[in-house]
Amino acid sequence: MKRLVGVLASLALALGLVSLATPPASAASTVWDKVARCESGGNWKINTGNGYYGGLQFSSRTWSGFGGGKYASKAHKASKGEQIAVARRVLASQGAGAWPTCGRKAGLSKSNGHASKSATPSSNPGAKKSSSAKKSSSAKKSSSAKKSTAKKSSSKARTTKVKSGDTLAKIAHRHAVKGGWKGLWKLNKKTLKNPNRIKVGQVLRLR
Image 1 (spheres, rainbow, N blue to C red):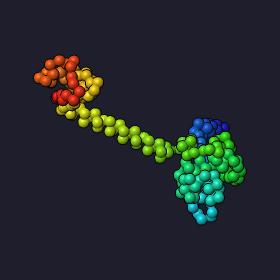
Image 2 (image 1 turned 135 degrees about the horizontal axis):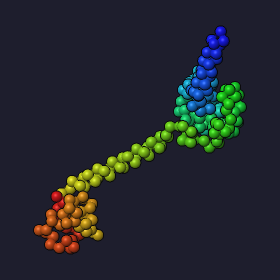
Image 3 (image 1 turned 60 degrees about the horizontal axis):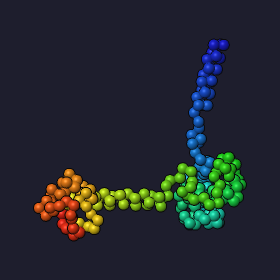
Image 4 (image 1 turned 45 degrees about the vertical axis):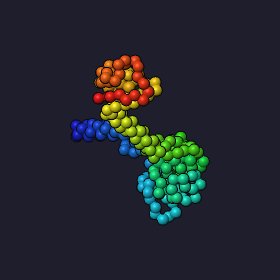
């Protein structure tokens, strides 16, 4: 009997240790996710027709009063990041009492809720990149692609006109001429006797 009790005790201890070593799944969630689970079951798009909308159950008056109208006419039509941004403004002004039951259950405070009267979706911890950031990234990629295309087309050119300030070295580098300026000179020896004397408007072979 004592042996059985010891085995059970060891088993319980082992299970306890496993439990302590493994944090609950909710530990990875933000406090706003916890509030939303309590308010709406974690559904950020919910509209039950009760006069409160979105994951954090904003009334139309609160939503518009704290700038939510900038994102959508009603909270449930806005993104999660936008809803949290408005919630942070409400928190800064009214405190966790704006969510009297669920705020208390979630342990919401101005500190862990990142209260800020000027909160924006882009400043939300863990929020997705804003559309403007995506557009900026796309613009950069497009610009890089254009430059790359320009370089390729330039390198495929067969002739070029000498511009003011050009030298054989500059032209050879610009068009990636094989052999550098010497290679460019060899290609144009028939019309270019002296490599140090090139004229603006003069046409040079590149291939």
